[in-house]
Length: 396
Image (cartoon, rainbow, N blue to C red):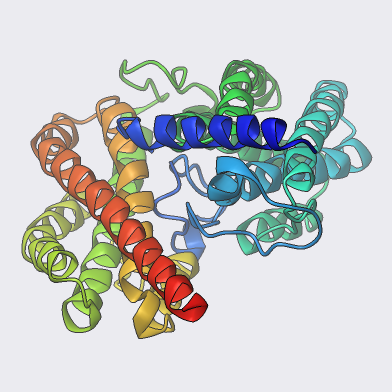
């Protein structure tokens, strides 16, 4: 390669990095990543499928990793895993279902998501990243649950999973499009949003045909904020109760992560941020717990779901030198997904008390997300500065 060509490519990469860092990060989806075991098969918020952390780099294998695509490796893995899950579930539904509409829907999922998965994994391979990803524990759990069903029960469970999964997927691709630094990742995410929303509309129609849970099958489109219309008041009450429960779980997790950071964070600003979260979030956690009880949830499990616990364990096992970065990454992911969940699902709640609580908490979540994003950039810059310093010292 000529010196001129090498300089031109280096310049283009630097321009892409600068543009990515200049983006205003406004929203993100996959913040809870878990729920109580008894609610696993019910409709949940738009985060349950992928559990990958937002910016956890994929281990490099062969090839030369270049540009900002590597910085987006966590997004690539998340998107590839999401598409892989749709292919696996769709393949299973093609074999197991005897309903023509369900089989046709599943066949299209296998075809479309198979092509999408290939696009994401090809991008990874082109940049020296692993070109395959396994199902995460939540996705495998969904497959295992479906394997125990047959006939109409299977059809209903599969279509409920498709509605919930595509609601989640639309938010995921919107988040990736907002957060990603590389043009390639942004483009793939943007192209995925309208396809996902089309699949969501199809999934709702087929779910309705097979008698899937009405509240799942009749939710408004992802972009809408109109009220849900369940078939009866008790169903509406249960939906709002589950919504409040998930928010309570998310707040419990944030509080536990913050208390850990109060003790172990090295960066004074990260520690100050953790102090603020530990001070502000308990009142919101109590409010969401009370609202969950009011809307039919007997008890909010203080241990949350297994994937909530997994994030806490992940931070707890993080070496001290990397603690600040991992903590801030998790917070950006969680609050980034909490924000659209409040804005869309919360404002579409059936009950006025849920909607009021959402509107009151939104400014606090926006402010803390903005602070966490700023800290994330700062911690990353500090880490790069230290690495550069070590490199210079070793050369001397």
